[in-house]
Amino acid sequence: DAKTTQPPSMDCAEGRAANLPCNHSTISGNEYVYWYRQIHSQGPQYIIHGLKNNETNEMASLIITEDRKSSTLILPHATLRDTAVYYCIVKGSGAGSYQLTFGKGTKLSVIP
Amino acid sequence: DAGVIQSPRHEVTEMGQEVTLRCKPISGHNSLFWYRQTMMRGLELLIYFNNNVPIDDSGMPEDRFSAKMPNASFSTLKIQPSEPRDSAVYFCASSSRDRPTDTQYFGPGTRLTVL
Image (tube, rainbow over all chains, first blue to last red; front, side, top):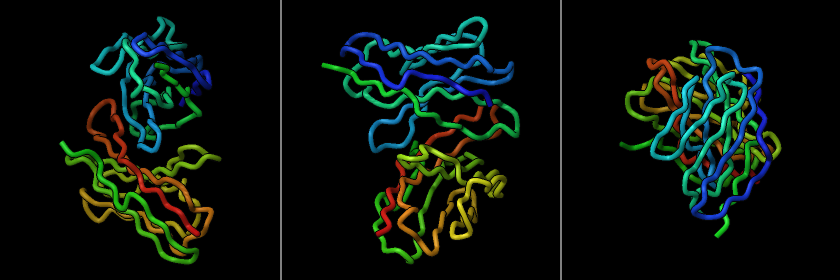
């Protein structure tokens, strides 16, 4: 699975949009981009995933560049409860691609 | 719907004791994963079951660790004998491998402290 690069930390003002970038320049055609987050002392929480097209759900939006070498997770109106470590993970969809490889992620601090 | 259920949430034991962690996956999911999280190593996969069969146990640290999945709704991770370096948070996750993208859903974890 392709490697991802994320900034170690970011701050965001409460109520503003949080834009979390991720680089995955070695991603291959059948690999998906997944985002998880981990709030302190909790298990990782699935947020969203995508292949080529931009995706949106009740939690966030995922913007994937046309060349698929990078993506951005957008939390439209960040709240204090969104303070967490956010992980960008690239994973294939075949039978042999079952492992989620967590890097260090981005620690997002939402500031009042 | 109930998510992945893990028990106990916290476990404190002494070195040399046997420890058993339990997991109930989401109903209908056919894949189950055990992960371990430490400050030094982050989140790492220990073992993966598909349809109750262990598929990949290459992440299990050593023979002191064993995992079973006797049926689709229950799995255990056992450490015998436990050592202080086993102190970590252990997560169980489940997914449905029948879908093109098999999103894994994690439980709340068991925080293990070995004294």
